[in-house]
Length: 399
Image (tube, rainbow, N blue to C red; front, side):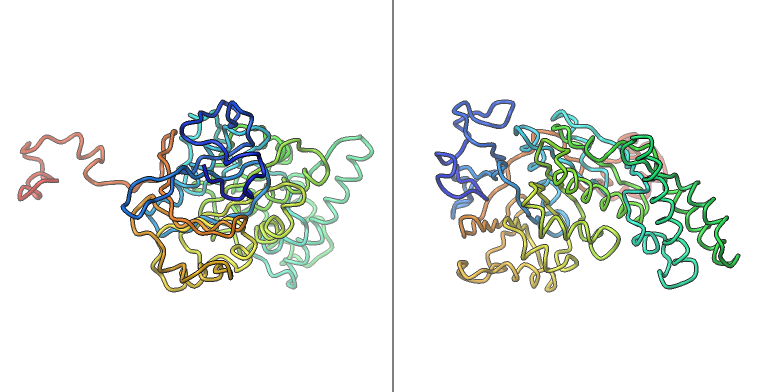
């Protein structure tokens, strides 16, 4: 098997393949390094060639591109499955659309987003709350949050408690008691009350390290407001990084983010850029999947050592992909993109090569397929010719 992201001979062989079954720990019986089975090379005649894997032994930064319906979320699930079977890693999936629940079949769990208010630094709170930091309400919120966090930290030190956090109710009370114009206090309080309604802030939430237990953890952000989802992503990304820096996490975490374009350019942006540019040293991997490559920053491509590109057609998205065209690649990447669902062009910086692959089938249920009117419960409960208005209106042909 050709292993993407791993230099040839680094584990004493090519790695596991379909004829070499992997154990529950994701390694072969021969003890080779952890490898995610991605799929197989796509031969010129369209047949499947040799197996293709992804290195899971060392940290990586990667992107998965593809327009809607070409398999980008499916590929992210394949990576999560492979990580679930690998020793020493901890896959965490950010699921904005609620499509990764099938990873429960791989021993995973789906959790509701819960973070401590202190997971967001004071300087980010005006932006999170939708306030101008230079305005009266914005500067008030910044100052009150900073003072509250400092007071909580001091109290925690006195009681020998780890990472204490005030609640949003406490922050509101501090705003009400602040020496500031009534209009500023009222605006800041209202924005804090809105943030509390998001339901993601909990002063007693467990630390981020609890998410990295080895089995896949899916953070279900379906239906969560955009600002709240960004706060969760920032808290998780920065929390994993800090935990590895501080030695509080004994596994190498992999953060897999679907619809990643939604989290750049806002509250989550600094933490994601930190993982892209500095995550390798402490051992934190980041894989961003998006149907809008043009909406992610250039650093997401330039810092990625692994690029998986399904079909793209928009000029802006193709331009972003073109930024990955290193000197070792011959020809135009856009012209080499596959057209069929489930096929992808993979650019591997470790071996300085690009390959067309067919992504393997998932072992766990995939929830990312498009709904079909012909398969709705309303249709399933009808009998052809039963005289219902729906049947009468559609009597001219099959459903």
